Image (tube, rainbow over all chains, first blue to last red; front, side):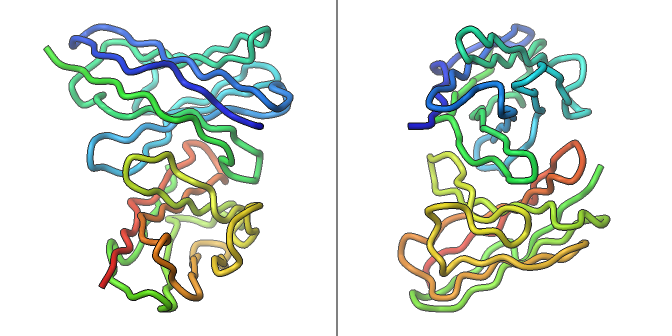
Length: 118
Length: 107
């Protein structure tokens, strides 16, 4: 079945970096894009950015520009999201989701909890 | 950036009630509007895409309408499993912003 499986929870200190993986299976990886969405505790959903599964093009949220990088390894159908210079307000659950152009995010990973604390 | 607003921010309803949630965009987004349901501790689930298309496997009691700047999600007969938070999201142009959500709880 179509699924996205994310890497496990992380605890990081302020100023550090985190890299979350999202492994896709059950579909042709390069035919779909992947978006990343995060949710701080008790808060709503925040779109972080998008990566084309076809050519690796990216589009990042303005407020994360310079701190976030999304990459892909098509050989393993895995997308990575790296966030640098972590701050306490980066503490959140991070989700990857398959993004269908014009069709919303139809398959979601299970979420990865990232805690930033000194 | 396109701003999304939702109303109400929360509502209390009973099983079998008809419920209508509203989402508004700060500029026209044509029909590039998606609706998600999220339950505590779970990933969001896509309900409606392109404003009015029902995602496969989603019960027909969910429906969406609207275009331009004003959109609605209707649950025709609320079921116990529908108590959740609902988010709209525009996919017209990046950043693909979400609304703040509407929490539907039990009256």
